Image (cartoon, rainbow, N blue to C red):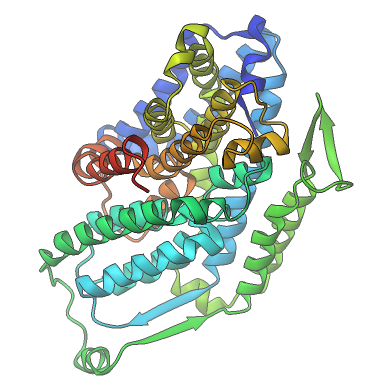
Length: 462
């Protein structure tokens, strides 16, 4: 995982400020491409993303002569892409159908269930399992805002309680944060966030009276008779469990695991081989009925894989420059819970939230002359044992911000873009990149984020 120490260890390789231009171009094209030049973007987004990513990569290799940052980025990207692809394939072979009235209360219950499930199978796993049945349930009244609230609740905020829930928290666990630390310290903020978002969703959804789709009389009678759940492809749950379980096979935590050693770091490959193998057998043996029912295709995952290739490599300069600025001695006095919440959150919304978590964890620990490569010191930092108790609040601020702000844009967290791609493949016209932010994140999500900051980080009420 990219971390703050790695970013600052090579001052001589500090990238020039203009090198963030490819990242800005890519984000701009992701935002405007589908709206302004949809035909071109649909047929060329792969070339654009890969070309911009390779341009930045080439500058690092041949101008800065820096191989460390690209290698760490490649390892991070490979783990990210393989995990998402494996989960996508496994979940694609599980057909879940809900025979019920698509009322606001039913929709809220479904996303609330997804929020709980996200802590067991991760936000990505929960999103992929539930997004298609959620769309089918609302077939006659589906609107973009429903998908957006699904992203807010299931794909992000829901995974706040365990390290399995969201990648940033899993990074903290691997570095030494106790497994039940998040459940112990973030349970009340989780309840508040989920309750508020569900309440707002219920109010907004209650105004949706659109009924373009009218079920056949016998179907309508069956729906009104009783609620039932139908699952096809249960055997894929076995492979899904293997894929999720393999996440724990980290050579930095478990000794003697096969790994690739480089520059004092251990890069996993056994975990990725297991996940790819499970995905292969999962797809090969998947129920054809389940795949057909889910209208399974590889297009959504390919879109995520190609676009995030560009995002991962073009954001390298942005990560390094932001880390260099934050590490300056004159800014040490500003390393407070309030600063960490908003700084971590701002970057988590527009960069990837996992490396952002690692960077600011390292920054906060450096203020107390502690290192995140020491499991003992990370555990002390998380519990306040042997150091200033404020460190516990610092970690709460970093954890809350990295998870919750991941919902602020499509690219803040991996599942967001995948849910968007699946929804669009189902014919739902999703808002543009900036439309998502202006129409939904700012009016609905931002007030919740401000309230959590004020109650938890600023006032320390919980």
